[in-house]
Image 1 (cartoon, rainbow, N blue to C red):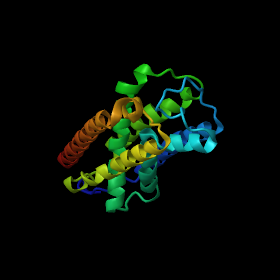
Image 2: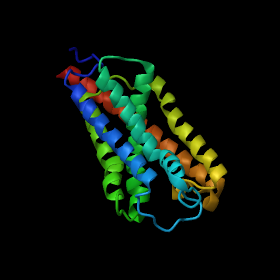
Image 3: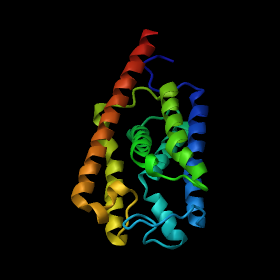
Image 4: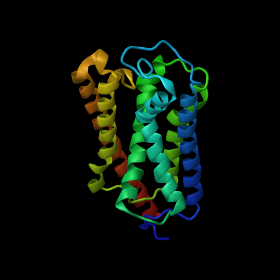
Length: 229
């Protein structure tokens, strides 16, 4: 295969499949445990999930409204498609791949910097939290570094890569306005107001753009290294 060929090597299918299994496992575990009500219940903070929603359906929809779960689902979809057809290329596949990379990176960084220091991990969270916040992000980045696909990140895709994060913001704020509850302390409109929350979300989007540019630069460097070898 030419070093300029953006398609991954043949053995990459196994790497993509492993990444997909891990990502889907994390998502399914979170939804099942949440639906069954097995997560340890702490004091419900006003304006956060758990303070207003009741029942299995409410808990599952809450879980599906976290950026973390969106990130893991996008990763799972993107690497599943690559595992099924590693050589197939399309704009949708490229956007999903880039979105999975940037969203899971943002998830890991925000979790470690803003959420983990104040969280008390107990019960089933000892299993699910490491999978969705640590193992899947690290594995996804390692698989991308090892097998790509290379050349899938371009300037034209950068604005498209923000569509899913923007869709999450619209969903999260819209649903929050209806149920008066939000997923994270820094998105708690009830306590902080829209002004503060929107500023924080704007900063997160800027960080996502920075991550995207860094991924694009690293992809270019890896392609040049491949050609040099």
